[in-house]
Image (cartoon, rainbow, N blue to C red; front, side, top):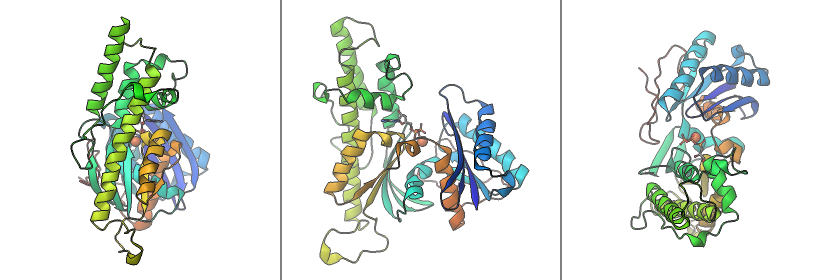
Length: 363
Ligand code: ATP
Ligand code: FE
């Protein structure tokens, strides 16, 4: 069985053809930060199919992101897919973009359910227990913006695009690179939400702290906005550190919650028999921000001290791509979950939240 996966939830157009075992037969990815062009989708799908040497008639199903994301972008992928499945008479599998990020790790190693997952990207920050292919328990999410968004905005405020090393990097990548030679102790930002003890996140306050620090420096040096050079690396290091520390504290809280509620195997050896529904001693980190090495290292300290393993997909599978969508399609096809006939009318949902509404809306 072979699945075609299509991803267009944001700026990137991705397509991949995958067999039942998770082997990538062909893929194509077009990243562009400007307008999402309708022609991209035709070309990217064509390219993935050609590289895989799989004719449309041989496909078992088409899997496409239908939520969450930008309405316009989702619509382009969905319109194309609707036409494609009708033309070739193929089953259609609507995919939740964040579920796909969460399950990517299973494409690379057999991680059994349930496991704890932290998804950090340009649009989301959330902690959830992955209990099954279509069963997620949401523990917490961002109350304002996502860490990737915050890092992108800080990078823009610092005009990092003009930095010779950073011109082709995303905001998060640029901050990570500059932070390597930075001294974070020069900007002691407060870790967000220090007074609450739940699994929710907030990054807008941090961005405000960073902006204030930048403004102060610009005023001290009497320079124009966006021209700061002197301590950019230190600001990058401090921002990255504070994001990492916030994520680590919330993740620790989630682990404690899972342990308290019998979702994690007890570390007490006399209680060696674990309930079938306990979370495996695995924590998965995925989404674009998860490719950050500093954040990975910080989280691995938390998992080590709590007796869990930290698993992260390689960086190229952490950001958006067609491969993770195809994999989610394969997982659903295996279990016969959420597979729709070619002529069914599915709509997209820009704001769908993981764990609250997981099913495709069928009109
Ligand atoms: P979502 O998955 O929530 O819909 P998205 O699709 O825009 O959001 P992804 O492609 O998963 O997000 O990730 C892109 C984000 O990841 C960007 O905000 C980018 O700055 C961030 N990012 C990429 N690499 C790094 C890195 N090394 N460190 C920090 N952030 C990073
Ligand atoms: Fe994403």
